[in-house]
Length: 612
Image 1: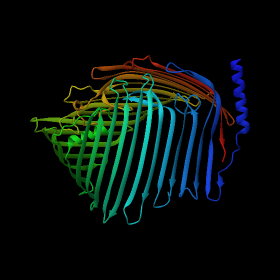
Image 2: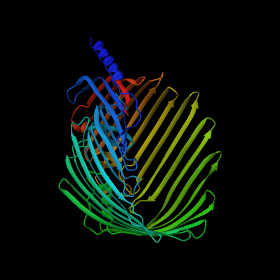
Image 3: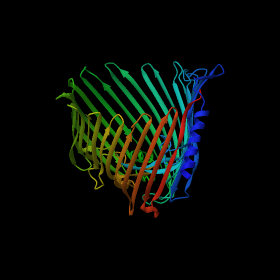
Image 4: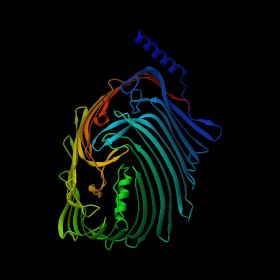
């Protein structure tokens, strides 16, 4: 009886959609100055959701999506776009959310053809799926709401400085499936820039201010629930000038001020950075460059780099003096077409947390690119000798990279390999070493095309007994006119910073002992299948499985996620018969809760329309 009633209801919905759908019309003028287009889709069907985190739900549902676009007077004067959507999910549309999501995005451009262009944008989305990420591993699913708003304006007057101003704000809240805890975040940013050229001098400057607030619960690695406030203001002033013989000179100034407050701990750092240089081309084959830089608060710059990632626990910087300066001279010579040789000498001194460091480096490199054995070959090698005054020693550094692309009969091949040993980092007390490779193949097999790939990378700070950051991935796929299949496997481990949206890899040059890092490791695999066995019919299915562990000091969490979804669509004229099923199983051992289980399905009809 239920199936018969559902079939009747869907058939009636399809008939209504076909009968009442508006006819296809061209762009409609609303008055003599306004042109608009409106299209979209409306849908109706039966949906059901089952979860162990709340009540189940089922019943008939209606949804749709639309797009209203147009202009007033002309697109160069005012153009706009509004795109609302209602009850859209991966079960009934191409929208990638396990839950029915609704919202709207909108934007407008004004005076686009004048010297005073402006823009405004707005978006608000409810009940949408988002991600909580771990590097190199399939993402974990979250559910929440978000909103953004932005406005900007420019002035481009002849023989006067070009000006641009803008403001952006946003907020979001989400819960991570399997934890029953919520996270909140909002931000505000304001910027202004100016550019001017006079007597071959190009002058530019600007200011950017941003402020962010977030509340982070005890999730994934068992950190304390905390409220995090941060702000950042950056002033820039740049001057450059073109010189004879294809040369140039430049001077740049940046002042960055960053503040941070969390768990009663607060810190504020300001760093002034000046850089400058001169580039000349004495001959057609030889280019030279000299540059210098000074930073009056080197520790503050590292602090700002960490805060900029959104980290929930950045490093604490003492009031000890800290600065950095360096000079660099380099030259590059074109030996012949495709072969370049270069050399450099540099000296750098740094005072960090009361301790002095200095380094002098000599480096030489060769770069070669040419057709080789029927393919394209590119190689580069750099060798450096670093002398350190602070530890009375020296070290050889090596950086190499090779790329080769070629077709072998029916096979298309591309591959790359890189290796580094004792490469100087931003903080000269540490060097980095590692390797990376990638290989991809594809080949026609009858009417099908096979593709495959593999990649891996490994990096570590040479002086530390810290975890190595390692990633490894394999992919394969087969596609044809009506069938496609793919699979992937990845593995990752290392250390990173905890942020509101997941774990991010530690930025280069940031000493791991100075920050609270999260150790992570895990693997994920996925499989996808798609088919269009007949005209108008398409079927897709995907399965993703991931397992990971995270550790923050003595606290550790074992995490798992399984996602599966199938979607089918059949088009008859302008009516689509849709059906879909999604399942999510996700859990974290630190939550003390059983894994969240969410299952949803839908079947119904939709119709595309174009009103005008």
